[in-house]
Image 1 (cartoon, rainbow, N blue to C red):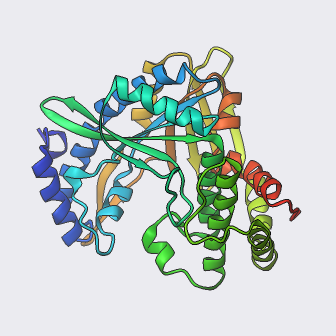
Image 2: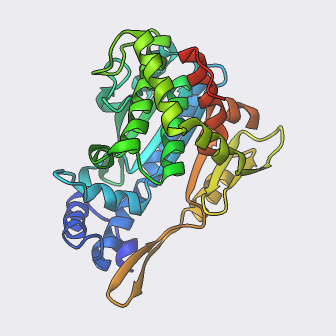
Length: 352
């Protein structure tokens, strides 16, 4: 049996993670162990996903999704400056998300899930937003499988909170920067910093619209916030750039009214977004696993390169229909127009 197929313990995973950090992600044996640890998260993540689908039945037009963190993202997280991350204790390798209509429903859903799953810790970024503007409710659930207790992250957020996260991803895609990365944000200057400021301010407006605490260090004077947003949009042409980027995306949907499960697949290079529908979970999950298979490494001289799947991003989603996905599970390609519209509505301004 190859190392990538062996059952990996938490301790072995952490040791492999240390080797990956020391080697800059170029240790083939450590990479294989890390990939095996990643794959082991599939079963406990699906277990949480199924609990979320039960929970979603209590809320109209709720949307549930899950994904495994890509190896490239795992390695990048381990290599962050001044961090103490250990591969064996990362709690977001397996991740699920529930999107509901209101903040009240977020907390109601959290209570339902606590009755279905055993939670480990809570991070409430709705009650206390991050300085970046990020708002969502996080719960880490403990799921035992094969003698190992895995830590699976569940995010519960409103459609408006998800819409803001859509905007962050869109800005990052357009300008080639990962604005949700703390390391990236710490080094921003000039217009890049202005765009980051715009994201903070728009989140602040969204938070107040939901009657929740605003973003730290943002002034409470709404007139001042709106003027600053207007100035940033005029000087950086940010929203104009987002509109142009959205217009170049081709969306292809292959689904019908019987489908309840959907694979959302994005190819950035060719600006193509594909939606595959399935009536049953098993078929959708099998296809998700096929699409997410990763070649562990390609040796080119002395270099080791992680080979990603054919799509840049694949997410498995459960929703009432493809239309529910468009209105709730908004992402880079589908949600930019609504994000722009929401910013204009919240600010009382028009930038078109």
